[in-house]
Length: 366
Image (cartoon, rainbow, N blue to C red; front, side, top):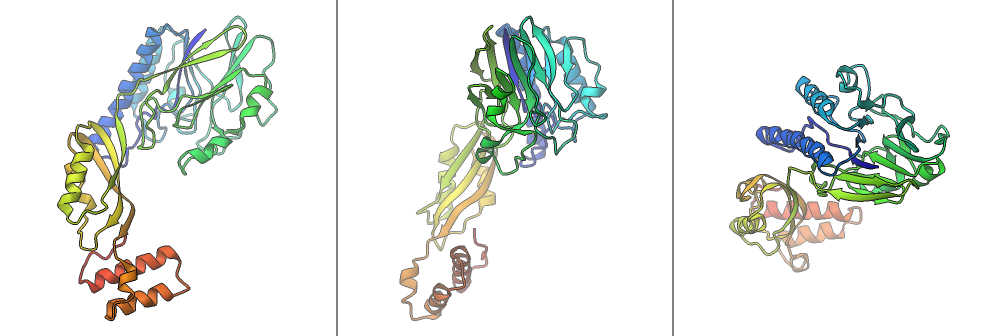
């Protein structure tokens, strides 16, 4: 059997980093990506379409989104299976309950793994989050797939060893360990929640089908999975993304004027289209007036560039300044000699003080 699997589309996402017009554009990108997914299901002749949760944002969804999902899935010519996650949790106000689904659309509605017979000898076990948080692991109750044949799972959860690789805002919703999949008698689990794609024996995270944030750079967030009679699963990745996102670093070391910084920004983003986050790093000349908020306008053909400060250090030569017989030198010697200061705090005090002594008003240390 051939399955097309995706997760973490996040329809109606806020996109708080974006301008209002860009945020609307990005939300439309996600809708277009859904159409790409359904179109791909036909192209690869999939036998079923599976979604591992976070299909939409429960706190922000519109009636238009509800109508869109109902029409797209009801019109889909193959069986559709939906396993709600923590962002699109199953409840009385959810799209999953409010929409009118065709018989071939199955929504898993319980916070435990329940069976559905995909074909003779092939069982799909699915579960739902029924609250936005505190869903326990679906294997914690001693679940075990019963009966013969091949057993697959579809749910939204956090494999605990992967948390360290994800952004700090990822909570361990429905936590589990990789070994629990095989221990439960499952041949493979298709799981949503993490936005970076992962494929290991027994487990696949599709990742974002279209990137949501700047850390989500994988563009192959649809999984074509072929399952044979012995439970072997062959994975092929497909790109269904509409958006192009870049995560760039702008090094301003040795720049003496802001015009040089602008020129480097223009060169870095030349020819790029889409959306970018630009992190500015490097050693900044003491006389450089660095205006990060003005750099986005130099970003070529990008729809929007988000500019942020990375590791920026003022290029003061402290060894030279320590020998200076003026007030500047005495200030540096006092701060450097203070044993109560941590390194980062010492640096901030030094840079702020030296800028003040230089008569500058931009005293903030980045």
